[in-house]
Amino acid sequence: MFSQAHLGANAYARVGVETGVMGASPHQLIALLYQGARKAIAQARMHLQVGNVGPRCEAISKAIRIVESGLQLALDVEAGGEVAKRLNSLYGYMTRRLLEANIKQSETMLIEVDGLLATLEEAWMGIAPEAARMMAERSSALAGSVTR
Image 1 (cartoon, rainbow, N blue to C red):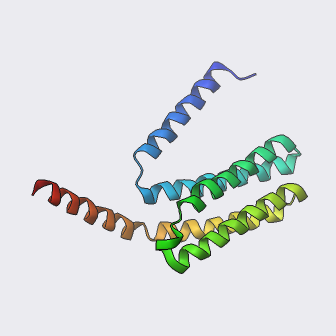
Image 2: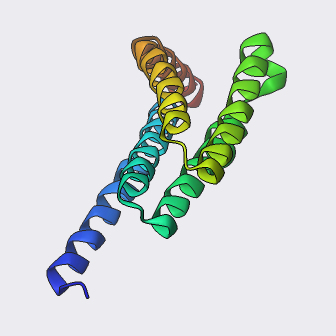
Image 3: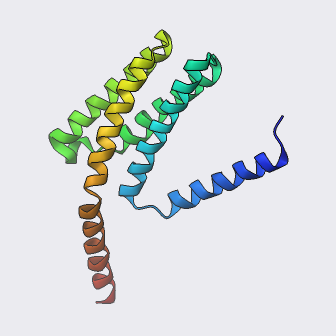
């Protein structure tokens, strides 16, 4: 069904993603999770529009896994205080809406969750300079303690 070139391209893409993940900072990893969830939702919308039930379900399941097992599990509710608690609730809401979107075959619900993720991704990217500065300070502090 797939040509050898297609299989090779997929393998190359996987290596590229794995390399990107391996070299990513914690901040970049969260950005990749947002991007992955949004891409899965876009795929689910496409499959919904053309009536591909199986692939639609798989794409929505992937988005749910990213939200639950990636974004939500990455939260430190204890240290993150009120912001982390609110994000935790929002991620739970997104998961429920994705499940409901799948059951009701609702593109509107998929668009809603994508919009929420887009807003969070934009805010997350907005703090990238501060996150980079904090990582640099942490690295130099660690390097200073090692050389002493």
